[in-house]
Image (cartoon, rainbow, N blue to C red; front, side):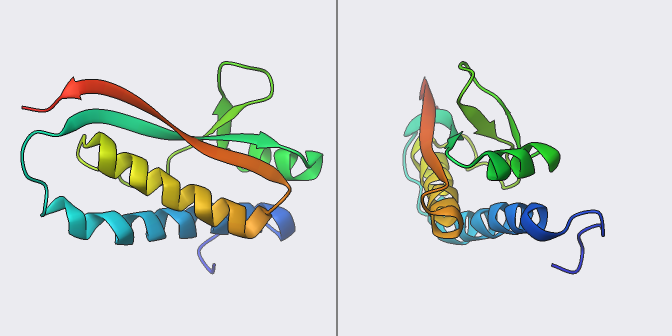
Amino acid sequence: MGGLPKRYGGLDRTVIEAIELGGIQAERAVVPRLAELRGPGMRGRSSVLVEFRDPKLHSAFRRTGSIVPWRSTTTWTLVRRWAEAEGSADLDEAMCLEVVRELKHWFDGRLRAWVATSIEGRGS
């Protein structure tokens, strides 16, 4: 990625690229489906949660500002760098799943990632 500051190299650069590519894949997968939304659907927001098995990878995510603590000392929330699905819980969850797939592709075995969705009710 030519647009990254020079201070990001090696593993830090890989972390940023993986998250950004995951975001691009998420938007590509979901944006066309926004036009198909019919009815109110479920309203909500999703997040990508991560646990690290590799201390070096964990450090790289922290150095790049890519994670914030969640409710436990071992689980982190990925800082969102992709669009939200206009309040649609289903589509937002689908976007986050794309990011999880990308993280698992890049860092298989070095982290555990999953999606948590907060349902806010039915849309109007």
